[in-house]
Image (cartoon, rainbow, N blue to C red; front, top):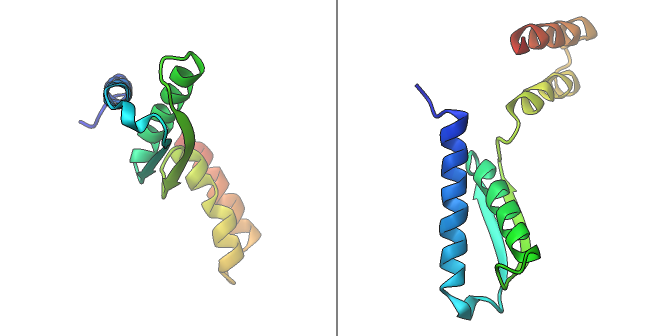
Length: 113
């Protein structure tokens, strides 16, 4: 069995807490902008960490400058990602016609339910 939503949220909260504590205990880092970088499935954690850091900075709990977030090949919303494949296939395949595109969306809707 894979990770549950609750376990992912717990991991995200723990990651945010560890990141914040590390930064709090490293005052020499306060002058440098914070850049959060993640790839693949780590994109979900990077977004959560970024939002936690942003809120802590806004609330004056962290004395940092948020420089930015870089997400590479992130799988943040599988449904939206897969839904974009139909148009991609339609554009790059000469033999992929409108009927096939409609079948793709019909199957996607069935799968989503």
